Length: 117
Length: 110
Figure 1 (tube, rainbow over the protein chains, first blue to last red):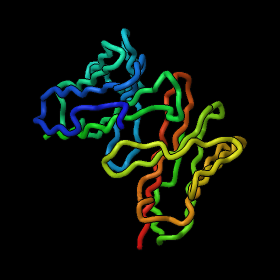
Figure 2: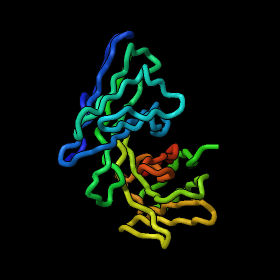
Figure 3: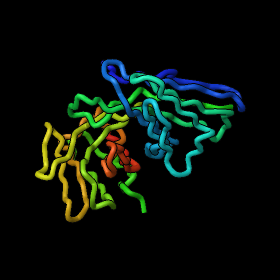
Figure 4: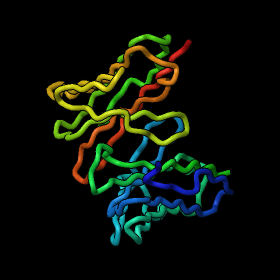
């Protein structure tokens, strides 16, 4: 079964709306989670690394004031797309690494498909 | 230059065919290597890790050439269900961050 849960799976909203996406690790504690974005026919691009109890680390070109990340607990990270516009429409995926190890370098959520009208 | 490069395809092959995908990476300090599979509108799923000695899992064989900074995936006896995008993934930096290639699309036809 899924070890990383992402919600919601699909969002359609008007331009200017802020959208919050949740990423939860279900059976392990994750001090670090990762947020990716994938545009159609392109690969996953790392947006930011979410760090529990401290500020997220953003990749070059990703606006921290646009994409707010909060990692308030060891099992939950949230990504808020503020004042979303059509160009923010994309597939957003989170991941987390199980500190207990295993063969998976990271466990991925199911992804959130965001469509801004 | 992209950190991880793949031929985007698509590769259109008949069932039962053998198909090979290649991937190159730019950072010689890369530590770990993987092949992921991604179905349309779904999250990526780990297909297999890639080890220096090469490794096989059923119909899938992965090879790593550190000197050439090159990774390959061979799929034998292709099935219709193998149709997907195959992502070459490299762990380049500390902190377990993964860098994804652009993916190679495979379409297996009857």
